[in-house]
Image (tube, rainbow, N blue to C red; front, side):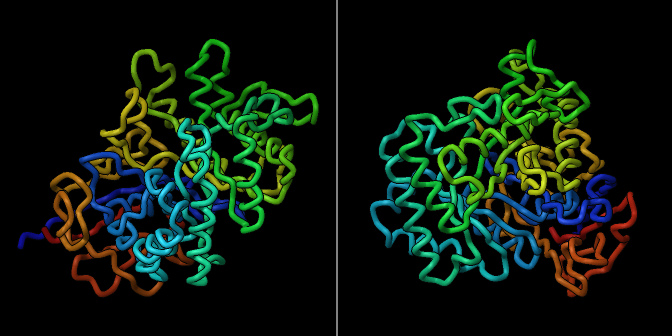
Amino acid sequence: MALRRLVLAAAFAVLAPEIAAAGAPALGINYGQVADNLPPPQAAAVLLRALNATRVKLYDADSRVLSAFAGSGADFTVGLPDRLVPRLAADPSAASAWVRANILPHLPATSITAVTVGNEVLTGTDATMLRSLLPAMEALHAALAACNLTSRVAVTTAHSLAVLSSSFPPSAAAFRRDVLPYMSPLLGFLAKTGAPFLINAYPYFAYKADPGRVDLSYVLFEPNAGVSDAATGLRYDNMLHAQVDAVRAAICRANYGKAVEIRVSETGWPSQGDEDEAGATPENAARYNGNLMRLVAQGKGTPAAPGEPLQVYVFALFNEDQKPGPASERHYGLFKPDGTPAYDVSVKAPTISGWKGSGSGSGSGNGTGGGTGLVVAQGPGGADGIGPGTGYYTVSAAASKVTPICSHSMIGCSLALSLLH
């Protein structure tokens, strides 16, 4: 068998653990797979390590991905698809079966910390889905409780900002009247179980809708005059924080105050779009996501909750060529499917060579599109490059241990992985 080499070079400054503020939440990344040309999960794992991302969000519970990250130290949020929501609501035994099939086989080797039930359900128009969401969440929570997993795995769901009737000024925000009958009991469930409220927040949409009036610097986390909330006296220098505090105000107005933690489950900026999609450029995407990552690393909260570091999941790891809608939908990735960066966000020139085929292959070579046989070995200090004293490692397909190449204290690092083809 011919020996091929997959070489990734990663040089980064702002993402190095040494300069992240104490107590800052780890960077989260959405790992979508609506594409037919993605590399195998093992290659994705390497790119995530280059980003120092230790929180990963899936839109399903892909066994190949969860198995590939076994022992990595990454915390996963997995998704229960919309199509299964009515089924779990109607039949609690279906929730137990889903947990047995999708959660139990991967614990404890892979850390699964949350399940999202559906995505943006409450801004849809399907009455059955609206009625089914909370019962499905309750059924899944009960199934996890039967396995003594509720202290480890939270049950939640993600919302778009369209659940709000208004978002500015932040202090005046409230949930839509048609959403509130479903939202209020859902907030009660989250407060009771300790699960977070997830919001998909995209300042890009506001800029795209009105580029003549929305300050680009304000949405890109760059120096600007800012805006003030007259009711609270709080000043906002970026739109994302204003959007999060609008959600916070709506939750307070629904009488749940600080009982529920808010997390940004999706945010990002496209590097390409249609002619009428203002601002969708590699330069703006690099500025948005690069500045966002710096903000996360600082561990700062929003103006309304400065002492609560905000947990954020960037959308997305890869460009996804099968996503429907405008061109921007297919260009949110930090990386192209071949592993090269879509633009420069302080992770420079990671390249993948020696990988062939399309789809996501399994580590054993049995998956769709040609697996590589790559083994991300576990050894002293951890092959994940995340733990104390670790850096980048040489990992081979037959490796029984890992060899550090450089430490995290170095700004420029190279990561070489050998694989059998």
